[in-house]
Image (cartoon, rainbow, N blue to C red; front, side):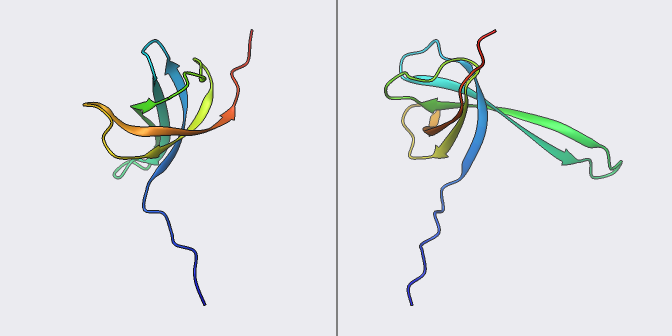
Amino acid sequence: MTEAKKSLKRTLIGKVVSDKRAKTVTVLVERRVKHELYGKIVSLSSKYHAHDEKGEFKTGDVIEITESRPISKTKNWVVTRLVQKAEIV
């Protein structure tokens, strides 16, 4: 029997907050954790720079990013797919 090899690369889902740089998007990933001492649910957020080769993702899009080799000083993530297109208001 052969089992599917589990990917060791992390994947995150977040919202594009900036697409001003060439081939790069800034993604805001929010997570909710329980405070260790007080038990309150707290929202924590992190920003990641992800590689967008074609420049197809715009501000407000919800995307999935995957960990990769270092592409530049700050880019270690690559956009893998579009989860939800931004709503035009």
